[in-house]
Image (tube, rainbow, N blue to C red):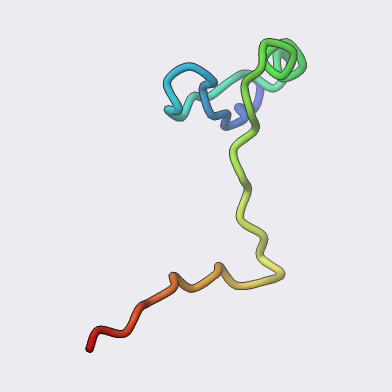
Length: 52
């Protein structure tokens, strides 16, 4: 079984998993690769607003 790659569906915005050997086909169809978290840098912290 081949490895799977996470994509974001261009129509629904949902996540989908695609076989590694079909990645180029899905890119050509307009789907985006999902961001892969980097282990080198920490995830960004959410911005907070101060309430008066």
